[in-house]
Amino acid sequence: MSDEVYGGIEAGGTKFVCVVGNGPDGILERQRVQTTDPSTTLAECLEFFDRQSAIHALGIASFGPLELRPSHPEFGHITETPKPGWDRADLLGPFADRLGVPVAIDTDVNAAALAEVRWGAAKGLRNAVYVTVGTGVGGGAVIDGRPVSGLIHPEMGHVSIPRLPNDEFPGICPFHGDCFEGLACGPAIEARWGRPAEAVEDVESMVDMEAATIAAGFRQIVYVLAPELIVLGGGVSKLPRIHEKVNAALVDQMSDYAVMAEHQSDFVVPPGLGDDSGVAGALALAIDAC
Image (cartoon, rainbow, N blue to C red; front, side, top):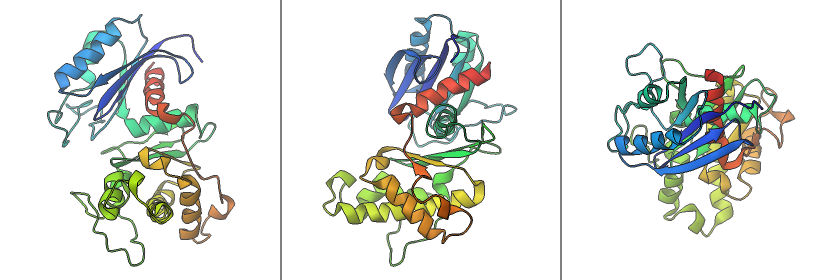
């Protein structure tokens, strides 16, 4: 790792995590900032970096949706979001103006995917996907070592997925009902079973259904992006044997098409960086900004 020091922000709906370092094993300072309104939250983050030694660049790994087209007048802004007060909030501008260093921004999941390719479970691979399943479902893709975005950034949580046989649960997505997120996220588990995942009595049935649902989403991702590995993170990824069960369900659902038979147990894996994939991704964005 480089001896140069970089800044990183993992910007989430409940907290912002600010770090200074040069990689996941080189985080020198860390501070959690509660997500309130934009002016208060960003001011606290700026104060954190004011107290640090000079950084070479800053990376921001943020919840979305984000405007990531550099030519767009709202580049670096959050776009339409249900998060109160954050609609059209400028994330990049205040840091670029105050710190006077290069500032890079991407989605939290794209950044996490980048970190996992650079240092984590997907290290050494060219193409990989990181998917978080928790309060929502989000996915980031790295192709040939670079995060993917274009007209918009990937919104894997909103792809349509095949319904499981005899499953009539309508889903909870306010936009699409039974999309990937509407069927698989943590709140969908609670709506389907009448209680949070940790309180469901028939754990095995719940995990089996969740694994099959996630696998249905991953099937779409595999056929479109052809990743060499899928990293599954987020709160739902802590369910017992979920990675093993998702991998098995995905192999079954793909019916030996392509090369999935070669990956009976090692295609869907937990994050190699644990809960630090996001902040490590922010540092990776900063390093690349230089």
